[in-house]
Image (cartoon, rainbow, N blue to C red):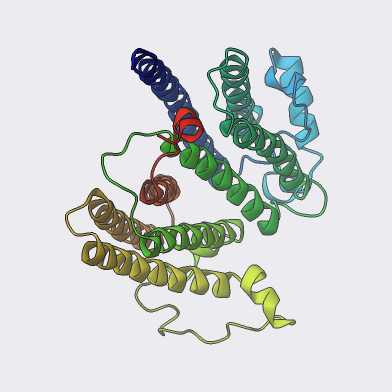
Length: 365
């Protein structure tokens, strides 16, 4: 009897230690999420101000130091003056004007480098001190690897605008933003898997619907990136009609037809609009379904709040379109998309419940 009491007390002590470690790791991951969201917003500002091609070289280490004097500034400016964007769009730009766009791109790259250290250093600490659970190790290594891949994708995107174009490829821009969102979602999923929930996991049907909603949010963000890459929001600035019709004509002038979904600004904006309607309907459906199958639960309340957030995002998107995409509203629209993505992933993880503690797995308790 005494041995059993000691054993139970030891298990309780280990579980308390695991819970404390989870809290520390969760706080760390929340900080990572804040920086990741900031990177996405600064990246949006970089795109909207036409700043993304102002740094024409990829220097992952040396590039952290900006130009320190007039001579170094002129060296960077001379490199920029060799690319088509300067020669065709910004010819005659002053050094002061160049510095304005340079700082946006530099800040974006600086934050991207910084978040790598923000992930890697605490990860090493938690790992080496035995505070990182076994199941979290491959997940966090995978997230760190995705961050490294994102740096390469970012340069791959910039390189597309240095030779034959005056801007970056919309395909590569959409890939860059979507990968950033995948990293953000992965961090959120892990963080919320370490949370403490007062309710049991939801039914499998609610979990599946929440998971599919995350997929639909990803698709809509990808479509929004195509709109941004083609500057498609600067035309057809009416709502609810587009070019005078619910379904405008001349949506498929490019051959083969599928190219229109990626290269025709009119088609891209149309698809983004109508998929937004679809996401809104699914959000309402999810809220109603969850309230019906899990009434009075936190799962239901989260689903309702998520539907409200989607409705607000729709209003922001419509206002942004009608006002011909001012930078402030464009960034608000992009930032709110990240909020919805984060909330939808958090809701999905919550419907599944927290990761079981390692002591619970080992002891079956």
